[in-house]
Length: 422
Figure (cartoon, rainbow, N blue to C red):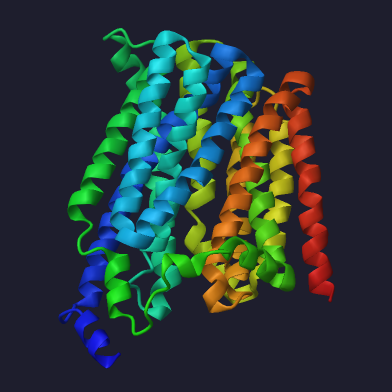
């Protein structure tokens, strides 16, 4: 056994230097990927509504969210066998194909092709989410949360700029005959291809494979991972903290996706000029995404300083305020922008504090499976929220949607308060 370990041990590795290089590359790709994701997201609901009505706008958002959850499964398998590099590249490649299909759907006015494209477009979100784990593969134990938060924060730079580049892409590519809303997706296609190629070429040595080679504990084989989902469910059911963590992440995502996905359609009800509509939507969505990511390091510090549950409770309060501001905004864009900023901030609180509480509430050997289960629950819940949001807005209007979202936060509030009282 000692001989095997000796053979497996790599030559002397400057881990801090390699981690700095890896972190720099991941931050750069988060900016680039964020540009592509936000450029498409900012016009996706408008495109679906123009092609198939308001209900389709929610379904298109759901398709992207569920795509992100499902594409993460094969991406994770690639990472298990080949490291972070092929898994992240695969997810970005799926997103690039999806962006190209959405642009083709606009050209041919094909709703089925639109939904296929938005599903695959979700791969880009999966890549952005998975990148945060790559940031901690080689990080020192006392810097893991800090490095993860830097990668999450870096998404802000691209995600804020992306919606504001959408009108430019739409106008510029229109000169070549590209129909309305097709330009932003072609821009996303180029961006995702670039991210895929850069990761394939430059993410070497692979951080996950290097971390495995440096570890004295051999990794489990694929056969040893059978039944991981059943074990994850049992672990979550046995841990009150894990249950609160899973519910926190899922509920925050439900409220955020449900309200955000239909906000561009709501803006379209009172802004009728196409160019003005894209500019207003780009501004509002940029403010929302800033709320989601920009303060993530601060939220993490608060969760460490004051505890996970207080920050989750704070997130619940912020989400309720977000629903109040958004639902009563009418055609007041500044008030709506405040509501969407609060929506992003509340999501950040429930996501960061809930994920931390989940992770520390389960045994180390069960964490990977439990985190995967939480991401699947989050994705399915968010997709369902996006689908139902379109129906609610179509039947009752945008204010009714925000009221339903506010009611949906109540079970999490009761759950956290009950555990706090205990």
